[in-house]
Length: 407
Image (cartoon, rainbow, N blue to C red; front, side, top):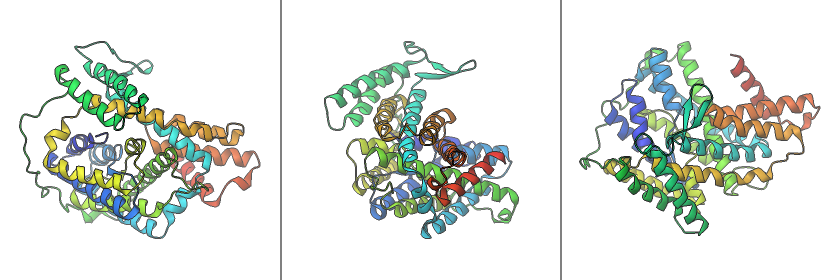
């Protein structure tokens, strides 16, 4: 429920680049289903996957509209990215990168993601709005006529919060359903006019690749950008949710990281073949983990629900952002708990952790937060003479991040 919005949002975004909206809906569901099944049956971890937000916007608005390429060119770039990720994962390169991130940073990533998804919930509900002077400000939360979504979300927040305090099982799900029902009289929840159960055809976007430009400089740049952001979005989600769930191993490593990363790589590759943008691990998985999900059974359940969504799209798509916002806000609060594990006495540890936390919501990007954190970690450790604290992989990442910012 907390990630069902992607079934409506992804087709909207990619259709801006000229893709068939109905076909993209089917591709989105099938790509999410395949990737989440791999996570459930191979990695056996409670994470769900789907085409990533931000990555789909880069696909449509930067590559297609901004750079002037066809959406077939962009799909080809995603396909190449997926193949590269499969190779990097098979040779354990992605796992080495994940495990090289310092432990304090891993805890900070969880906290930063918590603030990030809470901010997403507040924004989607209209509680926080944009402001040309202060960038963001409080919305008109008592304006029933123009901002009823905020009232629905705040009411849902109170209902869900009370249920959590009373330790009611399924509090987040009950809160989403209650908010959805509450949204009907406010006109926030739009009941479907018909219940069409036949999925739209994939044919307009299936295997639509453009091979004549694969050796161009633009293709290299686009593939690298997809690789870079997908890598650290996935890494951040895995580390953050596992830290919150106390699933990290004693040395801070992610259990079955290779299998989890392979699910992401396979999902991206098949997603491109089906006709959608890069697939990544969803931070909204924290909602399931917060309810007690610890195994592949959780992600298997999500995969089955994706299958149902293929045939019951009107029902899934009627859940408004105002109804899922309370769950995102409260899951964000739950993900703050690892902050107590961060070493705030050592400034070479606390400053990178702080930058990781604060940059995620402010830059609206998990990967940007990780980049700021690791780069500051390397610089502060170097200039403080604490060279032994920097692993070779972390140093390499620091150099790559610096080059990215400079270029």
